[in-house]
Length: 462
Image (cartoon, rainbow, N blue to C red; front, side):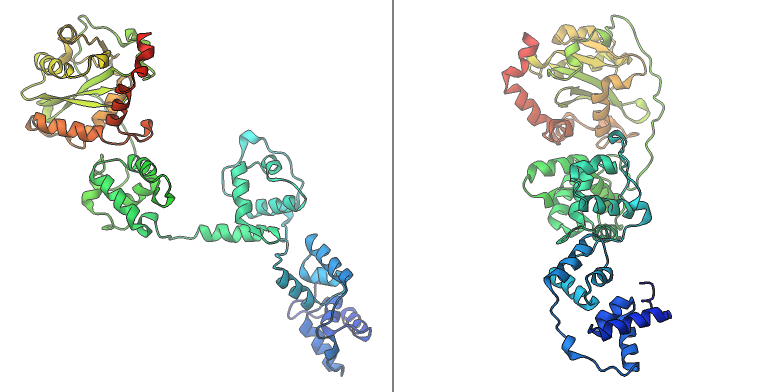
């Protein structure tokens, strides 16, 4: 079978075998298959020897036994030429049968794929893309009767990876590695039309969310709630970020790009700045370690965290209060300064607006603005606890909220410019943003749900 290529000299034995088959009554094509040479080579030999084309061979009907032998060889992994030779039929007839049946021949298995397989530890399964060798192994095992579940350990791959690959390479003849590889290669081709570009309705929803200062993750999560039955309106937050950072300039305007909380139009490595040392006090301070344990797991609402966000040269400030369970935000207007007296007065006025059932505790850092915490507790009944020094993670909800507020109140600006009406408007907007931890419901919706359900407080009053 090694003399079928062009320009290769067939040995005398191949020529002898060809003429023996022709003299025995085989067609020139069938005789060429028997001799292991190309059909054109057989035709040339026959005409040079003075043979006349035998039209009686056209449309030859092979026996059922010949057909069965041919298909048995094909299912065993033989090529069309090899199967035709073994069954004693012409290669042309074999190819015609394959085409009529829609049959996809077995993939030629590389040597590496034919090696003995060993069971792979399921806890150390590979996460990289399937190789062609692995696809050939998958085809070989499926042809040998293994199920997809059994292949999980044999190939060291997740069951979903195997299921997707079987679907990718499925043909009328079963899974074929060559088909799976071709589909995978086609799917990897770049560039592709991005989802936001090919779906104008989805792009409009994303742009609306950005205009409302929602983060890409909040937009992505909310879309699944707003369009639960339309997967074409779903998008990952990474796709939105790529639309902002990767796509051609001008595709999304600079104004919308600046709607990101960071205000950046390109990605930047994350890092932390040094937190300036602030004076602390210790008189009458109650440590966070004494705060009720119920505040830790956020199961019961009513536990708050607070802090100040500072303006230019620390000359102005805005007070922030965040409810730990819902993320509901209140802002304190500090028009003149942020001394302990001013903060105490503003906090006392704001806290009395909170339903009494939601006044369980307040956690603050050790800044001097809280020197009159005892007076606040006496006036409102709200116990106040203080974090350890240099431990902002003990007020993680408030730290996150302060980051969101910097979108409205950038660093280095005069915060005393903003009046109480604007602060309430900003708080309302933040409380209307969908949150991932609430299944993309908003803090306002979550707070209303809890206040409308008395059973939410059963554990606290038990």
